[in-house]
Length: 263
Ligand code: MG
Ligand code: MG
Image (tube, rainbow, N blue to C red; front, top):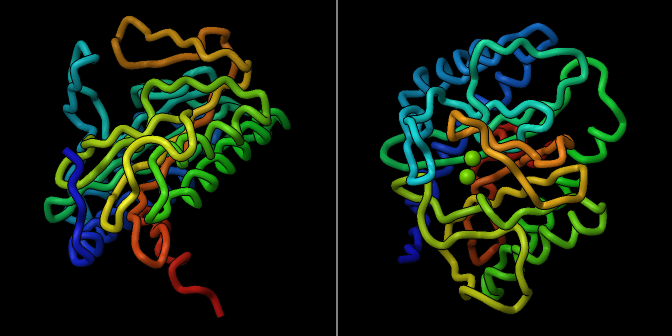
């Protein structure tokens, strides 16, 4: 069932979104060559705890998972696209890191992800990240009252396809509210003008993840979580929680300073 949020509920979700934005900013600042992924998990955990929030990731066990998730972030390195566990791995020069993080604050969830390179980047990795971010931007722009859910999916895929990225329609975006994963599902490919009518008060996580090799295949490690590109190519994943309002899409997981509108 698709639920719609009141302006007051959206404001409460924005507060949760700020926690996620701050956690991602601090993880990014802490991520250096030699950093352990577990240390980055601690950094995010301190932000979440310090804000009086809890993590919807820690202990999460959806139907596909063999074990509960062990972390407050997913930390996915290089060919890992999604659901990487923040273990003892130390980041190496040029690693492409995708960090996914969530928060529950006052009973409201928020969910966002970012991708970046530590150390000296390869040009191809920067291009992959830029393409994935451009797809997220296009998806957000398509999240307009009066449109259809397929408009968002199609906008995401068009950007990925133009850059010859591999696109899987598994593990896309989702509705979000009192819990992290709700209806509707927001696939990363689809047909414009089709699917759920987009109404004011709909809150969804939009989250393109692309693989540089161009194939859509992936493998999951024995841990039941770590999802890698089948061809070994690098992957990137970015996400925002977005509310549809009469004034257009509102990014609930944007960093606080981006709200000021500048001087
Ligand atoms: Mg999500
Ligand atoms: Mg996420």
